[in-house]
Image (cartoon, rainbow, N blue to C red):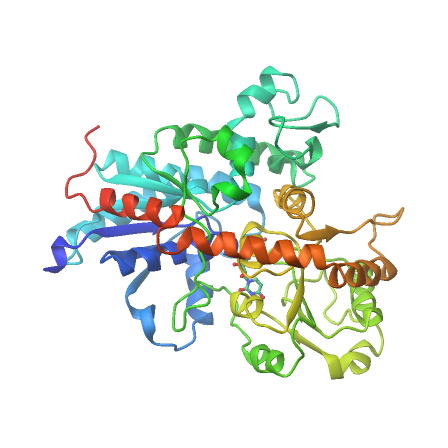
Length: 463
Ligand code: UDP
């Protein structure tokens, strides 16, 4: 087939690690079906991703990595989500339009569809304006999307006001069968700053509006684990779990260089013995809680693999308790960034001490690994409720009166979790359930195939 006749998808994730990884996996799935892929990062994330690339061969060269500016100044903090969201709405649409125009004029083959992270739903509007069909992938739980879609109803029921603030702090349920949630944990309130909250609320309302017109809305989930949320978002098409990292030689989209030494270290540990400790790409610890965690892991006596990102700590560079590293050297490994999906698939892993980001949740679930839940913000509290109360594949912690999770609590819950055969058995059942969705005849695979057929149509939608 000549270059110009291949379906050519422009894939654009929200500029954060937990969004780039699932969108990259979706790109690989499209590549397997004969698509050309242009993957659009912000310039900032593009440089991080390219810097952390390892020469693995495989598909790395087949996905074209391109970048657009995010509209922020060079030294600005990209973890300031409010600013990033404002800039995504005001600056990035014109940058994307320009990029598509440039690609279409080049010899690389016109863009035939835009596949946007649902958190970048404005990109669908750009595509629509240019006559290009589009689809969105929601990379978090359907439960979180239900929360966002329910904003008008939450206002109507006076649970929140027109600016997104709760009328009072209370536990609510979006539907009788959804888990309870604290109004303080509504996703736009995750950062304790009025301006940020207002930016996030504006952004959530934008997503709400822009997704109304999406022709396809996919998600990285499946019916069996979120029945009641799917009832609240009936038009969404589950294609999960999306798991890229276990396939050798595939570009995963990491912002940090993976330290693969942990896989050979895991090879030397007994089956189901190791506690894997990782808090995703965003979580930040203060020194006091970090030290309690270290001492809790030490006190537990179990082997552990701990991901301590270079920016995990708030401030101090050497925050470990005195002598800690020497005392645990024989039964621990600390790395800056792990090949997490391969780690979770390793038979030595006994449990996952996790911040419960949705990707981590799906990865743990798909590998049958029991969870110890340590949510940090946004949807992680809902994901924790799924894990511990709905699926019953994990436990949570009880903080002390100062809001700190003490070392004895960490040791106690680790012992309880590792000794709980019921949790282990349910974890295995869910693993099988997850695998079935994406295997031959599975519902996620069927959904994905129908989506592919539609995206391969030669003509764009008629608006
Ligand atoms: N991850 C990884 N290595 C690490 C820690 C995390 O590859 O050491 C990956 C993990 O597999 C997941 C993503 O980073 O795919 C984190 O996404 P998640 O939704 O769990 O959390 P977020 O970073 O968005 O808070």
